[in-house]
Structures are given as C-alpha cells and as structure tokens.
Image 1 (spheres, rainbow, N blue to C red):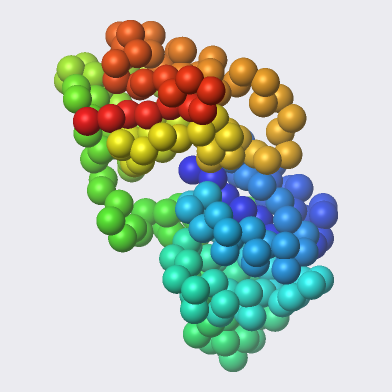
Image 2 (tube, rainbow, N blue to C red; image 1 turned 90 degrees about the horizontal axis):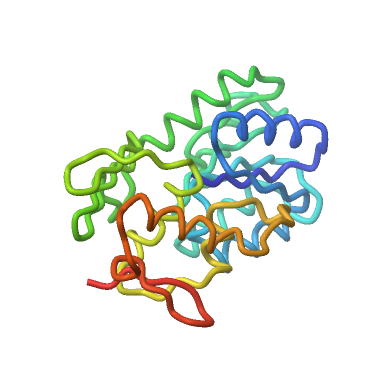
Length: 222
C-alpha cells in the first residue's frame, strides 16, 4: 500500500512517515497544497490513501478535496486539522473526505483509521486476483502458486499486485517503481529488475508469466 501525506509541518510529516513505514507502507510527503492537488489529478491511481492537512500553503485542504471529488478522484482521504469543532468536521466530510482526525492525535488512532479506510471495498477492486496459477489475496496478502503459498517481501507483493491489477497492459519500470517505492528514494538503479527476478524465481517463471518488454518494462498477458 502507498500513502501520500500532505502536511506542511515537517516534523509531524516525518513522524507520520516513519511510523507508517514501520507498518510496511510506502509513504510520500508533499508540503504544498497546489502541488498535491495537481499530482493526484495527474496520477490518481498512484496512491491507496491520502492524509490531507487542512491548513496548507498554496491551497487549503477542503478546497483540494472538493476539486478531487469533482474530477472523479476516488482515493480515500483522511483529513487532519487543528480545527476540531463539529462544524469543521462536517465541512470537511461534506467536501468529500472519508474521515476527519483532529490534532493533536495519537499515532495508534491514526493507524486505526487508516486501516479502517483501507479495508473498505474499492470500486472494481476484487479481493482475490488470479492469473494462470497465481492467486493473490489483496487483504491478507497471501499469495499462492499452484495452490501452494509462496513467501514474498512487501515490495515483491506490491510489484506483483500492480502487475496483476493491470493485466494485458505494458507497465514501465518507472510506473512500478513509483507504485512500490517513495519518490524520494534515490536507489532506483536496477531495483525493479531485481525484484522481478526474485518474483520469477519464486513462481518458477521463465519469462512467460511476467513478460519482459525490452526497453520499456513488463507485462502479464492472458
């Protein structure tokens, strides 16, 4: 799972990122409201959840959330704010936020709310993904090959899930990297290729299940 945190308090943002990273999430940070708004409008499928502060430079959170919803963005939004009155919460929820958490908050509560939002069923998002002899449970993160469980790292799971969700489509290395790793991570190099290689070993794939599209990326084609 990949989460975008839009928060201009650097210390708070880094604390959230560190805590979520320890829970196995990939996390990106953006401080400016306009930058975050544009990023999601252009890359609306990049994130599984957005944590959005209300008071931001560039553009405030409620206006951003309203614009996302008006443009068909369905990514769950958890709004954070120091404005904790009932009317403030109603205002944020009416703008399209899925949940609203007042500052200060305990990280345990933030994590609980995130997990609750991510458990909600997504439109056109099946619980079980299947391809040839591979079955992937998106909730339990259990993967089987020929009905036998295989052990994947978190990144291997994220790469495989993304490929399976996009069957019959060529996925570039940049797309895979953007989905599974933080955009602040500078260790790209051959990271994606190494993870594909490891995946192939675990599912006994000689290149027929996960096909290499030379010079571009990978594809799982039925």
